[in-house]
Length: 286
Image (cartoon, rainbow, N blue to C red; front, side):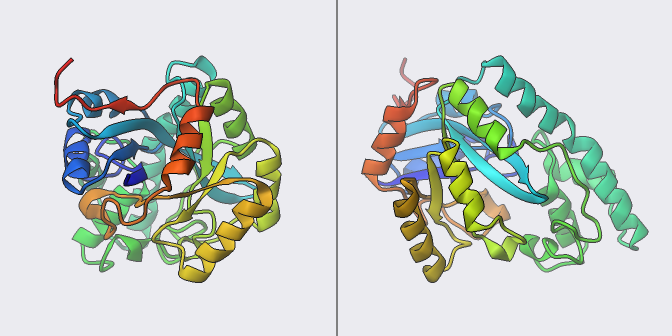
């Protein structure tokens, strides 16, 4: 089985619609794909309606969190999307996205970049606007060569000249809320230092003690040595070790199935979940 547990659609900051994403996942030879848009489940219905036969969909979301001033992302799988407390927190994060993006545009203009809110809104379309959309505007304007080039201290990285904070969950609260909604939590790309500051390993141990289920080990932003260290850390802390592409369509260079999750780990995730269950595709048949 080929299992990719971290992808994004136009419901947040990917370039594939949810329907395109599941069709592309099937074409890439995946057996299982998780749709984990940022702080939203809005793409799930469309993905389910278009799910090809032979492909199983794992519903999820990537939750924006912050610990001791450091941003981190928590993948949440197979939770009940209607559980009220978790739904309310996701809504708070989403509601903060537009004013935050507008504030980043204002900062960029103060720095002499001729970006406009209309440009960023066009790029975001119906998705939940975020830093990648602002980054793509900088690419369009020729300020940076690619989206990754915008995530530096010169521009949009945490603490960067045009960075603006947003409402984010405490990761310990995120673990508690996801578990209360019957879901499973995996710390996304925990040592992706190229993205900026990361939490120390002792923080991962504290999250594990609080009920964290796993860490994303095999990821494009972890080099071979980092992946080896994380596999060891997962063993030390009793955490599940996952692998994923973090696919964003054409917005990033990663491809579907670039990294995958071991079927035994996937099986354990599904065994732990009680809020929702993987959905096998029927090719549009009920």
